[in-house]
Length: 249
Length: 249
Image (tube, rainbow over all chains, first blue to last red; front, top):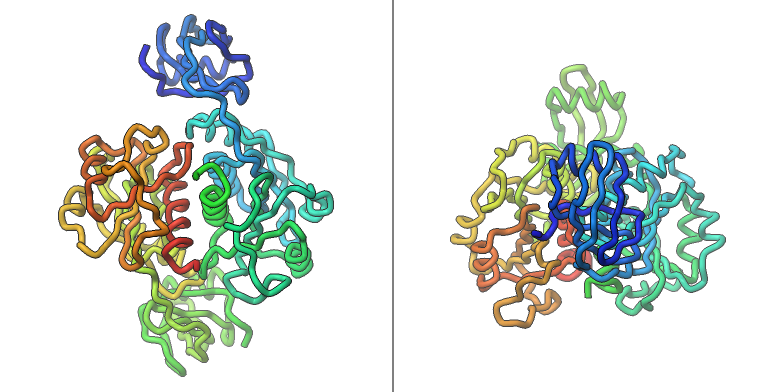
């Protein structure tokens, strides 16, 4: 059996000899779209048992069975990193979720800010994007997508031990400083639970900005002299975090 | 006159009192789409004279005139940074160009690799994306988009003084090392002319990989344990470069 090129995220437990029944849409994808037949290899993960090389042992139009043969990756533990962002346009929101999942965020939290146009989000659709990104990027876990929440409520209940890297496009305008004048350096920051917050494209409101800068866990970070779109800023900020404090070491 | 919210990239020289005739599509955008009228403010840049606040002094359906009032930004000098990437799908290619421009690349070079499906590119369309990104991100210069070129030819004529940060999605698989065993650290790298090369989604060929790893100017960089899509990798790599060697200091 060759190493599988197709990866699937499943709910079912995985282990040596374990059979995994397929849901109808997964069977359609494997046998209808990708034209796999019995004996073909598929890699499976479920967020708990690592990655397994499985073999198609039964293939039908409406279902099928895979059988786990050998573990190909141990279960990875994602860095305890949340991405908070303000959703705006649908395509860019999809993109941010895909990118955050690839970049290894454990939890993706769409937030409503003072200047966010309060579009509803389709949490199930965004979660499906996160699953697809995990299948594609070779990860063994799936980022969890939250429902839309108000930023001010999240900040009111903010966990004491979670640091907050806070990126604001208006930073580029250099119109305000950190509360004590000197910026804190990310390389001096503690490891452990973190969140990265990307400002909405309309910027934060003055009240939000003040609150964030006065937050004891906040680490304001500047992403250069140009104003980045929210999706660009999300990837750039996650890259800096991963390289400095995450699993890119 | 309020500060302009709309930014336009023009060819015309800019300076105090300078009048700038508009092309037809720019007039359509300002007066037809954005509904500006005489007296409205527009910010202008041309890649040479910095950013100017200009006023609409004549508005018509097929043309119009802006008059420069005061300089609002000096001319910025972009870091001497090229982005080399292998174009695949149209939407993702557009995205990479937009992102590279926002992230401050001076030159964007689509390259054909051994495993690139040699789609032609529309250089003029990609250049228009770079202009739009410059207008949107507040930069005073526009990244130049090159025609598609073969990677092996670019490497054969590689400038002696230009370093090459080389990102390969297959790095995540840890299947090969640097030629001398120990990876070079980007933070020890010289400033000056650089390029960032993003691998194609199908990966580099073994011959390309060997050539890159043996290249005296190459700095292999790992972008974490997950396999990133080319567009994600482009933003992440440019963020690391900008934070370490570029203008995000």
